[in-house]
Length: 82
Image 1 (cartoon, one colour):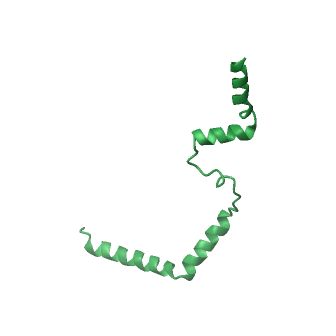
Image 2 (image 1 turned 90 degrees about the horizontal axis):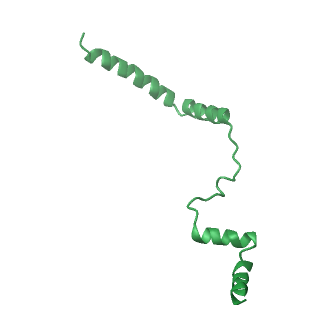
């Protein structure tokens, strides 16, 4: 009889879903933050590419690329044998 009351007292707290969740997290802590996966993201790949390309043109990096390609080709042709 005492054993039945003991088992009943132990299992009453474990019947609710919240209690199982607390038990699960106390014994097996999750190293991952799941709230990050539940967030909404607006991904517009073409708008991001267009923005990056416009920044590439406006900042003058396209000229640095062209000058580097031309100088690299000239130096390669002057230093190669044959």
